[in-house]
Length: 500
Length: 86
Image (cartoon, rainbow over all chains, first blue to last red; front, side):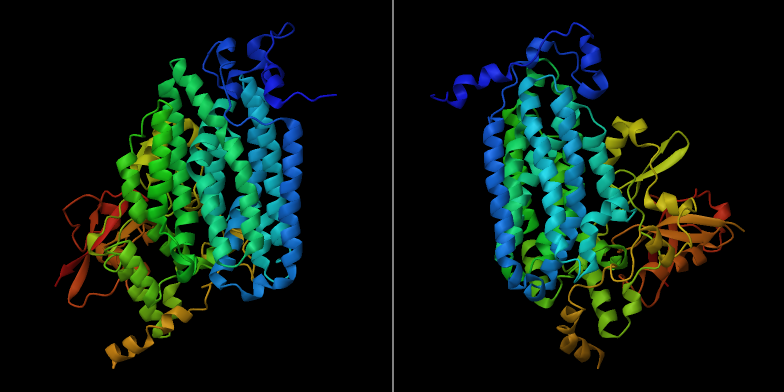
């Protein structure tokens, strides 16, 4: 029997809305879970997903993808990437797996919410596949690092991280909970699939796969590419939704959610992707600076998507462009300085040649962040390593949960943006984070940052030992300089001459 | 005497830090406590200078002998610690 081609029957198969008789429409699609802004049911039928795939096709393609990624891993298990890779690259892997694996699994519940409570039948179809994608991403990114656990306990954090109160995990959880596990189907589609995935991760995964290939890690490169092909499909859940919302007079509502999603995604990117691209990736493998990557792929491309869909660029766009030049340098310095509090080994990335590269890509780097690194480098050369460790906590932002930092040195732009709300003072790193809070204060007001918890006596004893215990960082897991400070020795001759 | 946490923004450093001081501390003592976490760690010492404290955004320096409890600062309020030629 001849089989109909997909497009001969696809439209009929996705026309799955019906008129409920035993319950009301609101009971079937509660506002809190659907978030459909009272747009009539028939209007949702206009949702037209650009990437059409049937379940049958999905299963076949996904099986092939899994077979490809797992067979590359099996074939290369003896190539000793763990023993031969640059330590900076191993840090990228440990950092990535801990920050991402269980967030992906959690994303499957967000996709499931869209699959059940989205009023657009096409969205429900796409989200059903997206839900299975995310389960796959969770599983595969737990399985792949497992082979390294016996050699390095930091890889155990692929699974462990999300169950702890480690500060970077608190930040990631706050963001992901804020945009995907506590939002309606519409909110999730706008914030997770449109702002975060279309705007950021889809491109970031392409870059990461290329970096892995450059570093000779074909297993990781194949894994990330395999995941990215799923992302590029299910990330498209959001765009047709924006079209439906704009066509039905809900542009402002869509814009606000997209703006919150982009800002929050940016802050996480500044601590996750920025340091990896500009500091951890070995110099000879760097293709593009983080700033160049952001300008080309995120700003230019994503800005076009926003405008094409009838939205505007977010109100904070100029501020975001400024932060692309600066924010990740401070995030990196902070992570390195507070390195005992992370589950990976930060690569300093500030040898003489690397500083030249940073100065070329970010003119003025030596006169700003370089000034702080000068003092750190001199302490290492003088045998005063104890001064390269912290004795207090950084004050973190009550929105992004990341250290409040800005340009140091003579240009010194660091400042706190406080806000009083119902008798409590909140501290923010930026106008963007403060705005996110002001738009939905009750959503965030009860949350305690790691500094709030410290001051509330929840971290005992009140010192580094107590903080490490609170964050569940055991010996063998806490971070240290990825290259055992070898980079500092390259300054030895100049240091000896200056101090002679 | 009571523990009085502040947010320290030290001149030319890159990050805000938690500063655990005492309500009876003078502003010179507050500045010295802030310096412990910044100077010689990420900010170079400046011979011939002293450190002064001001409320974030203010041009007015607190008197050096003023006690924290008399300053009007709130817990976790952000102070700027700046160099002054001496």
